[in-house]
Amino acid sequence: MTYASQLLWNANILTMDDHDTAASAIALDGDRILAVGDRESLAPYVGPETRLRDMEGRTIMPGFCDAHGHIILLASMLDWEDLNAPPIGECRTLEDCLSRLRERAARTPAGQWILARGFDDTLMREKRFPTRQELDAVTSDHPVFVQHISIHLGVLNSAGFAALGIDEHTPDPEGGVIRHMEDGSLHGVVEERAMFDLVSPRLPVFPLEHQVENIARASREIYAEQGVTTALDAGVLDCESAEALQEANRRGLLAVRVHMNPYYYLDRSDPRLQPGGMISVGGSKIMSDGSIQGFTAYLSKPYHTPYKGDASFRGYPAYSREELFSIIEEAHRRGQLLIHTNGDGAVDDALDALEAAQAKYPRSDCRHIIIHAQTIRDDQLDRLDKAGFTPTFFVPHVYYWGDRHRDIFLGPERAARMNPIRSGMKRGLVCTSHCDTPITPVRPFLSIWACVNRLTSSGKPLGPEERISVKEALRAHTINSAWQHFEEKDKGSLEAGKLADLIVLDTNPLECAPEALKDIRVLETVVGGETVFRR
Image 1 (cartoon, rainbow, N blue to C red):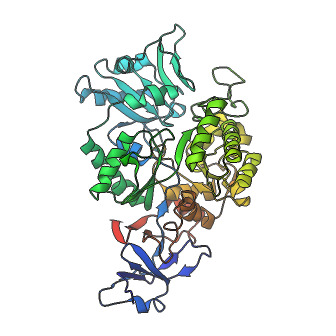
Image 2 (cartoon, rainbow, N blue to C red):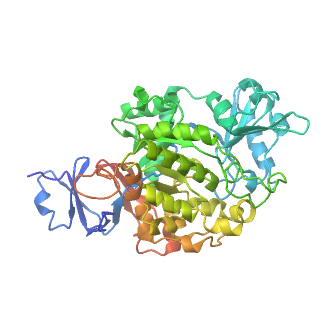
Image 3 (cartoon, rainbow, N blue to C red):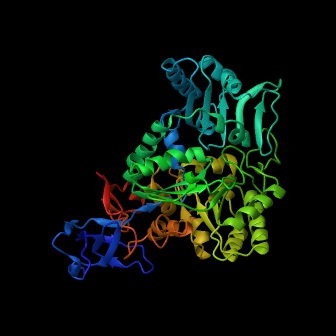
């Protein structure tokens, strides 16, 4: 007879199994779940060394499995200057941002980079980016880089451009833009592949030891505190960026598990991309377009507000159709794909390429993931259903950017059905929702709240017909996410044999008012049977 290492009883357990089985006790055998039931039925598992825990009626549920996010990127930005606007941060004007940069420059040795994150031009009073000249006025002694909230754009000062070897004669890469002033000089803003290919890879990185500390800190103080037991890095850009994650894993410093999705071009045989310990490795990431709020997402119809006066502007794809088809075909042959597609034009291209690849090289149970799918149409959801593909929606976007999508980028009709998670579920699709951290903070219960309420930051409903039930929203953040990443046999529900990854809550989400969901607090996070956070 196997005795339990722990027995948690007198609890309200939301198992998230196929039948939503109700339970009041759970027996753990080290890092696995031994049995789930009630105190009486689990009595045979109680031995002389079993730790008995009276949970006093608290709610227990599976730990959250992040559906899409970037823990390595978040960790790398913990030391950057924060330029977020409300409701995330406090910057409301360009001067607020420039003042913070001046203060950072004053305490930074000359020649060192000033790095900032979270800037959102659409939330500034001036409704624009700072120019290169305005950043030059902040400091000429430091290279400066300001990351847009979307991650798809950034701004540099003259010293920053010079440090990267970019000048007014540098050509735009395919799928990217280096903005210029009317006189041909550099504006300061770089978009999409101009940033991803020419800027981001050459920004300074902290020493390995500091990177390891930041990843450990993010896993412990951010993810575990919010009840996330499996974090994601859906877009490992290079093997070097995975090194600190692997080192933190080797040292036992990861408070939560991490699932990695390397970019399609990386060599999967590299030891830094191997699973083991707290790390699992899944499908390949591809970027098909950009950001709606950056006017770089690729739409099938023009933006609601003409971009730079161009009423026909629809954004642009990251790759030509020919190149995208080639990339997706090769990646499909190797395994699962995760394709970033904010605009429905990008979804068209991605689905065309996926269907062509599947027809040429048939694979069963692909679970190719369409990431964000913010403007996906009903006909495209039908194609996903037919092909066996799956969407992960950025539903918190309704809260953070819904007002501006309605008024500026998409217009009322398209904005009302952005992130159409109910439409996806009605078709039988296994749908999830995500925070896309560090784009928005790690707040699973705010994401759940957004799925259920669909309210913007101004409190206005946006697409109420796309609301889902609380139970559906909970599943979208647990078992559905585990399924999307081929981890449903180990994670996502509380069942015998699965990993003992669970959280204890101060409120039962099935019994609280829908508007209070975002305020639920995690009291304890357990990973592999060990408590990694307790309030």
